[in-house]
Amino acid sequence: MTIYQGSRYEDETVVSIIGVDGRPHDVVIDNVSRLPAQFTFSYYTTVQGDRADNIAMQFFGDPEQWWALADANPNVLYWENLPVGLRLRIPDGLPG
Image (cartoon, rainbow, N blue to C red; front, top):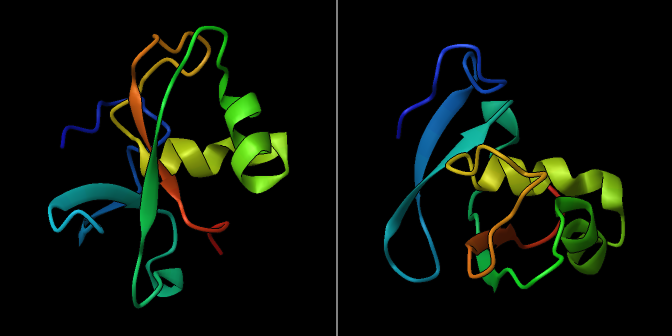
């Protein structure tokens, strides 16, 4: 995974985890000591009109938790313009 200079993730730790699909996935962890023993997630495919805050509200009950989505999907650079058909990883439960 490439973390670009100037990114909010520039100084964060990237770890590779094995997802429920059995494949490795890179995720950003802002505090490695909070890393759960088992990290699981589900998938969501975006539809027309989706925004990060709507998706966070749907899965976490709080639109301000969209950063949990960003942390689980560091490959998405522009959260204000999500294309239709984008497959997102949704962390099971809120991190931390």
